[in-house]
Length: 205
Image 1 (cartoon, helix red, strand yellow):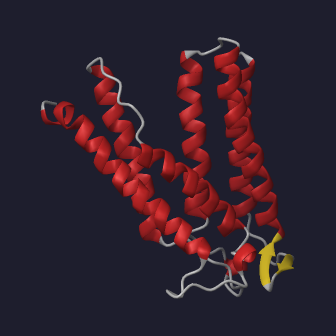
Image 2 (cartoon, rainbow, N blue to C red; image 1 turned 45 degrees about the vertical axis):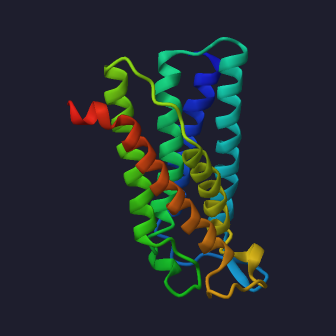
């Protein structure tokens, strides 16, 4: 296994460590108070893992291209690691563990999680169909915007909106929530774009 694939495998391992940390049935959990917002220590630990995993995501792709180490294993593992990282956190930030019930943690709404995961599953399916027809569907700008906004939304939720606690929007939403809603909207546009690109393959399947 080459270095880029080792980094990707390490990222997958980090994801499962993070899942275990967030799902562990704690009785109580100390929090750090930032701008009046409580941030459980396990969320700060998960944030550190998320940032480290995101760095390895950049490094494995960069090294694979620079050192000409692109492999089929890497093509399989890299998107798998990315989806595991983001979708696991979206789901975990949607549910409320028993030890968090009494806190004022922001929770990601289920509808946004459903939209973003549905987009990922559908796009992956369309791409597989296109590849079977000898075609490659190019990434669209909405997908890139979705990824950018999704990463920052996850960071902001892990920090419980502490970065923007003193700011208020006319809508009553927090900047953290607005970032997530924009990511969900970008996901919808990306999904529509991919369906349009792959409609020929889907229709004749």
